Amino acid sequence: MEYYTVVADSYEAAVKKAKELYGDDIRIHSRRDFTKGGGFFTRRQKRCEIICYSSPRPQAKERPASRDRDIREFEKEARTPDPATLSSKERLDTEIYRENEKAVVLLDLNHIADPLRSRLLEAFPPDKDPGLELSDRLLHAVAIDYEHQVHPRHFVAFIGPTGSGKTTTLAKAAYVYASQGRHVAIITLDTYRVGAYEQVKAFGDALSIPVLKAGAEDELIAAAELFQDKDIVFVDTMGTSPKDKELTLRLTSMLSLLGPDRTDLIMTIPATMKEEDMLEQHSVYSRFGKPSLAVTKLDETETIGNVISFAYRVSSPIIFLTDGQKVPEDIEKASSSALLDHLKGMGLVMRNSESQLRKER
Ligand SMILES: Nc1nc2c(ncn2[C@@H]2O[C@H](COP(=O)(O)OP(=O)(O)OP(=O)(O)O)[C@@H](O)[C@H]2O)c(=O)[nH]1
Ligand SMILES: [Mg+2]
Image (cartoon, rainbow, N blue to C red):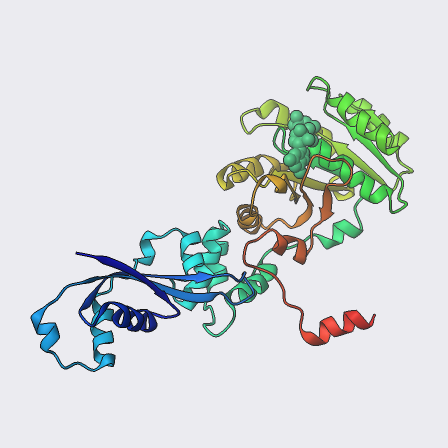
């Protein structure tokens, strides 16, 4: 038996072409729908590939069928790939999903998990563009800490798991405010890890920001007094693990000396971390108060859906995003567009009047 492959714009066109080329007796072995070209916001061209074979069946020849009816029969025989067996990426690429499933595919692609996922899908309108509708819903569900970006308290303490980017992000953030003309300083409580003080001191020297270390309560009080005329004092802390209860208690007691109402807490969370681990870490740090989140290491992952799901679950706003090791440049303040830039298939479309307004300014 000989097999032939025919590709056309639609299934009907492919069957028609196959019949013209190989005769009316061909039978369909399989069908594959896919799309070519385009991007998320430009229309992709739909294509259909069929594999057929010739099978002279007497009854088929005898049937005086119209072309339309033949096509319907072929349709029944064609084996369309089962969407459930395809990966999200394949489903998005081949558009083998109903249009109202696109929202689900986008959530899968971005690793957005419950309870945020259910909230985003609640009564999803079938007539709206899934990418835009999801973006809009997401920005309503996840908070951005604009308030503390603009008006940080006197102390800004960075807490978070070991190696999550506390010291690097603190140095970058300190520079953001220093370059706006604010007087900033750094105190490090990390006198545990070898080289911790030298690391933050090197950043401070490079950025012309004074740095002091405080390994005990009296040293912290003295350092805070020395820096009392500064606008913002950034406080670096040691990485603690959920198992190290003693160190966590020690850190809690040190931070409480700063005064909770004078201190912003920023928890660094690597975008590469699993959501369960983020939750475990967060439960340790929640005893300090409710932190804002600085999402780090965005350059090491393709999507931040996991962090966004986590932020929603713990009701913490996002304040900074970092995407590289370079100090001070690899940081940006969290914003709607910055979050959407790190999510696949989502984004904002400016209405004509808005874009016109921008051009005119
Ligand atoms: N790729 C990448 N690496 C980063 C980013 N932020 C920090 N790092 C790197 O992550 C490593 C740990 O960063 P630190 O700032 O020392 O992390 P930490 O939380 O202070 O670590 P400990 O004080 O040991 O708990 C360093 O090699 C940083 O250069 C980032 O946005 N992207
Ligand atoms: Mg550190």
